[in-house]
Image 1: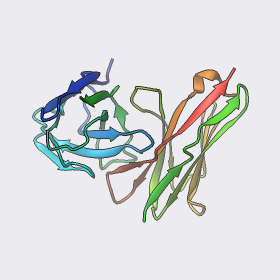
Image 2 (image 1 turned 180 degrees about the vertical axis):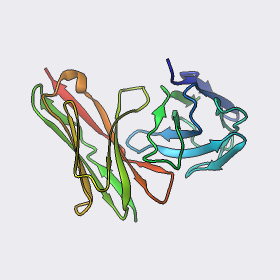
Image 3 (image 1 turned 90 degrees about the vertical axis):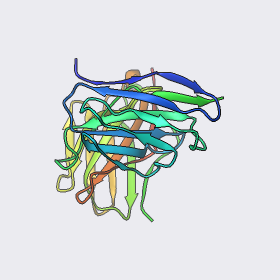
Image 4 (image 1 turned 60 degrees about the vertical axis):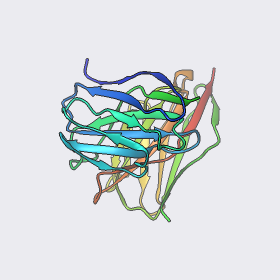
Length: 115
Length: 112
């Protein structure tokens, strides 16, 4: 079955540690995204990538980093510079950003808690 | 300022009734409006899409309307079932931008 796999599902981090969230898709989608979801707020875009080896900052990129070395993979690193990292992180993909409505397919999410 | 608003209070209805959820926006001119369903602890799942030149779209028990004059979309679930209980998100896409802008969602509870 085609889809997006995020791992881990749950992650605990100590203050000052970097953590990396994995996102893999087998949909052959060009574009991939990372969103953050906090209670009572809409999804906020962290980073997005349209093609391999290229990515752009979204609305809340500070304290995060990404890479896109393969079409299928778009890992997100939450660095110690992110002041409030506890949140639900969602990875998504779409066929192409610039075509049509840009319908997103989401992964199941990763919940990060800072201890 | 630009805003997209969904009712933050949960909608609680009896099974079999029609659920109507609202998405209002200001200072946007969206080319597309999408609705997603999100279950607790899961990622959103795409349901329906409506374009700016369409008034209404249907899919099985789901219906979406789009009024660009009122700057509002309504999402209807007819003959609602307890399995329809979830949070429903609306999202806008402007023609000039790749970005999808999401509302914070409305939680629907369908009582048996």
